[in-house]
Length: 311
Image (cartoon, rainbow, N blue to C red):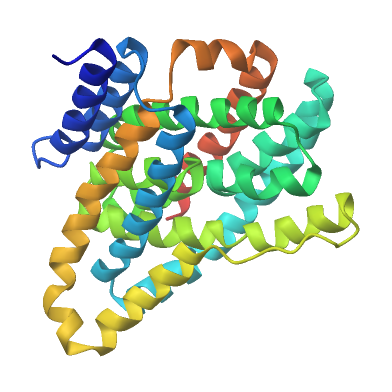
């Protein structure tokens, strides 16, 4: 007879398969994860779930490259380059000022600012060893980003419809204003395939800024000793586009890989949602959360005004 722990794990696994169904959207997948994370007991450890979620997310991003036209991606990347550059400068600059205002520890403000400016949890994971952040600080920063990511996934599609945005505008806005790639893709997919392609391309263009930012912090904190590596999933995303463009055999299966990747992404969102527990949110503290919200609202409004009036 199955004990409570075994039943919890079985339910957890069954739901992770269920979210692959086309009927389940990105927001519902995240919601199911939040639900099971808060009511489940003795399910797989958070570290294990986070590790699997990160791997699935990266594989999904590589797969999404099979659904993009290379020339279109290049043009979109060019158009999003200066917008991402401006948003990153604004976020990091305001992060420095807000940290003074909130009297926040330098490590936690640096991690939240970097996560908001560039690519959420991936930026935090990259910057934290450079600035020698402790485990508690990293957990708090990730908590802020996870909560705001979840909120964005639910709110952005409704706001996009309310403002009557085009697919291009909404894709750009998601890519600029939402932290993690998972929520960017999840929100954009709710707005259609075109918005998804634009959001993914510009988001990964934004993610590339982690290289100069990491080098900057490396010289500031570690005197240039920290060695940074380009994330493999960004390289994989580019390779998948090249293969789709130039290899006929790949072109025939590319749509299926693209659709499978969108489905797989929902599993990543489900796993990420399972980490959004009440205990985790309480552990963040009000000052880091308020700091993250203030920073995120500014960049969200900046992106909104830009796409509505200039794109």
